[in-house]
Length: 157
Image (cartoon, rainbow, N blue to C red; front, side):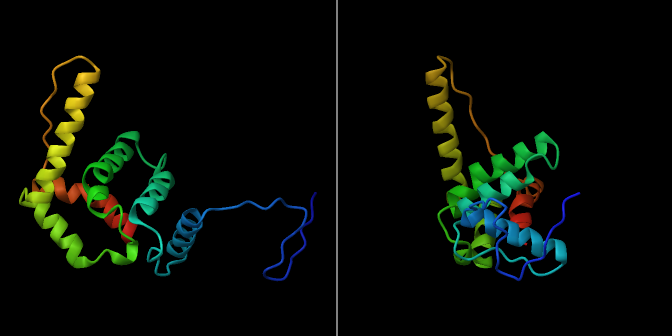
């Protein structure tokens, strides 16, 4: 039976190899620890939404059904990351999120841009696969938008 010696805070047990953890992974761990303890788990401010979303997806993968994970990944890739991916988390405002949701529900300019990009990707894929392109439509009903923002809410709460 192994015995473990308690060390003062900040000291490292030399018998254990040290692991390097990149900043976004350590921030994700910090957030999850705070959530588990019931404290506020506001996401870190000095990380881009794209990096945080990637770490969040790694965190939730395998915790639910594969179909749920695919839905989260798709919503983030097609809708959310084009709008917020390059922003620092501290730059994302309630007004920005509200504008994003309103534009999506109204099939506004940002939504139409995402549809154009999705159709362009499909045309390229069809060309590579020597087939006719399918028309891509992206839902924008209130129910679709409400379901689609679930991962966004989970990440930012």
